[in-house]
Length: 270
Image (tube, rainbow, N blue to C red):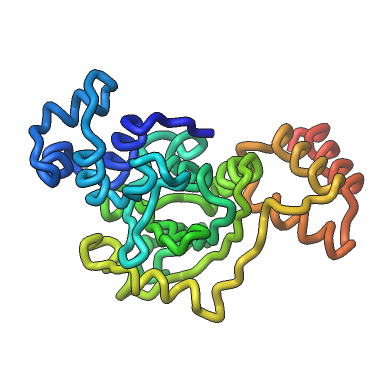
């Protein structure tokens, strides 16, 4: 999905983390225009300079030196990124998909805002409004993604299929869970600077966080079912992918029966 040159990766990660060119360049003792030209591909910088700058945005010195294939390294800290601006069905979660391109396995927790923090309209709709994503890669890096504005919500409950479709295209194995956070953690994440790796790491150990693997070992019928659902109801599904696959695996419904139902709904115009 992503094939970024090192200068492009620098720019993408820096912007996703909300770091300015001045902040990153000053860590290596160079002027901001030098980094600007490098990110645009108009100039080169020494490996030593790149490593110093890379440490400020959690890039592994070994990757920058060409001795490793995975770019991130932050075993002691939390890698915080902002969801990219754009439509939910397009590039909103690019930071997540970028990490997936380099990983073989990701555990992802959709963080739901506490009920008391939602407005009356959200509670009336009765949907779990997701305001942040926490995920862990296969190298024990832990990432946190939220909107750029502290009150932004990532409405994955409504447009969950967009996430599923991108995950199914990935070679990375995803396990997904959902968790309504406490108000204390919600406030820490909104504060951004207050939330730590320890706060987020604790979520992955909680017993009520039930991970479901979503893109490995699909049967032929399950794969056909997903393709059919994408083609027919792509923009209107609400977690139907996982619901239907669960029902098929429990032998409660067949692929043919689901297709028959969907086609009947299309024919009736409902």
